[in-house]
Amino acid sequence: MAKELFGIVSPVMGEKKDYPVILLDKSVQADNRNILRKYGEVHRRKMRQPDMLDNDDVKNVTPDGNPIIHYHLFVKRSTATQYLLAFTKAHIYVWNPSLKVWDERFTCGSDVEEWDTVNYNDKVIATNNSDKVIAWDTTANFTPLDNANSGIEYSGGLYLTKAKYVTTFENFLILGYTHENGITHPQRIRWNAIGDENSWKSGDAGSAETEGSDFITGFKIYSGQLVIFKEKSRILQRLVATRDVWNWVVMPGNIGCLSNHSIVEDTLGRVFWLANDMTFREMEHGEISRDIDPFVK
Image 1 (tube, rainbow, N blue to C red):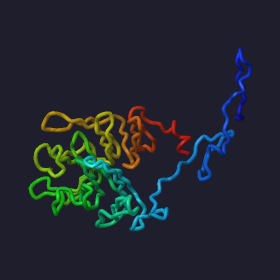
Image 2 (image 1 turned 90 degrees about the horizontal axis):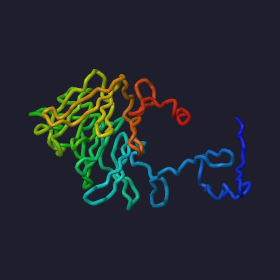
Image 3 (image 1 turned 135 degrees about the vertical axis):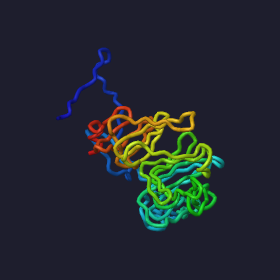
Image 4 (image 1 turned 90 degrees about the vertical axis):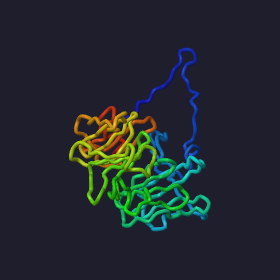
């Protein structure tokens, strides 16, 4: 469809001609790339990529040479110091802004496919479904949570040795898709005693099996509730003042989530994800695939 031109005419002043103008080369710098220009106007431009540069302004790759598969930004509340963590399949690194290098903070027992991280009690908690759940308080390296040789002890002589997902909700640390006492539990969540990441077998600590045989695929807090995403369903979790600790409501529609990495939240608090029916969805309005189709393409 051809562009239709029109003019602006004032009944008093006649045709309006004092439009503000600016030359394109004055508004776009030489190092900008991949701009979308339409009708002589810049409608969108690709922003500069965030690079970690060394002292010679050369891009600084991770010491193990592996791609970064997960980032985590952590602000230590006690000192107001900001840390940027990078996670590869083999290591965890923290960016050293003084020396402009990546400092190693953890070595995986074997190569991993993904990481999940969260801030809790002024520490970073990380899990990768291979190593023990680990914690970092910025003073040294990551160490196993609960500081036990066999992992997190949740009962006398019984240990949780790995988990796929981690989140925080109502001052609880919650693990999902756990491996406990030598058995994998894809539908299980386990939580600590409120406020204490080292206490898992007393107080309010406990575990529960989510409804259905489909596996847990991630967590997200939405509208004051925790959403437990599963392969074919979603469960809303609320805190209750009983020994049960949690109340669960299964959301209707048999709509689940394909990937933890697809769960995102925008600046307005809206939660989006890639559903099991291969559609993009938003918590309140449902399917939005058609609305975002031009942007996806």
